[in-house]
Image (cartoon, rainbow, N blue to C red):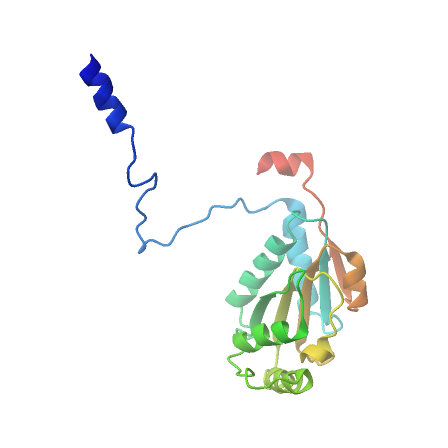
Length: 198
C-alpha cells in the first residue's frame, strides 16, 4: 500500500512546472457572443444608412463601457469591407485613453502605408496624411475608444470633404457632440428579452 501511495504522489508532482504545450501553428479562436438582437441590427442599419447620406460626415456611437460600442462599430467595419461603396478604403484605429496626436497620426499612416516616421512636426505629418486621404474618392475612418475631443484637421483627416466619413465610439455623448457628429447613436444595455436570447 505504501508503494502505491508513493507512486501516486510521484505522479502528482510536476518537476517541469504545470503547463501545456501549445501548437504555435494553430491560430487560437476567441469565441465571443456577438449581439444580434433587434436593437443591435437596427443600429447597424442606421449607421450604414447614415454613411451613405451625403449630409452626414461624422457619426458618433456612445454608451457606457461594455455595452457593445466597439462590437457595433466592428460589425459596420466588416460589412463595409464586403461592399464596393468605399473601394476597400475602410480603416480602424483604436485611440484609447492615452491619446496623443503623434501616435494617432502614426497609426493612421501605417494603415495607409504612408511613411511619416522621419517627420517630427505634427503639422507636416498632418499635411502628408491629408494629401494621402485626398487621393481617395471615398473612405471611412473609424476611431474606436475616443475619450476626448480630437481635432480631425490637426490629425490630417479631411473631415469636411465629400466622401470622407468619420465614425467614432466613445463613452461620452459630449465627445460625440464636440466632434460635430451629425448622427449620434446611443448604445444601451440589452433588454431582458435580448439578453435571454444571447
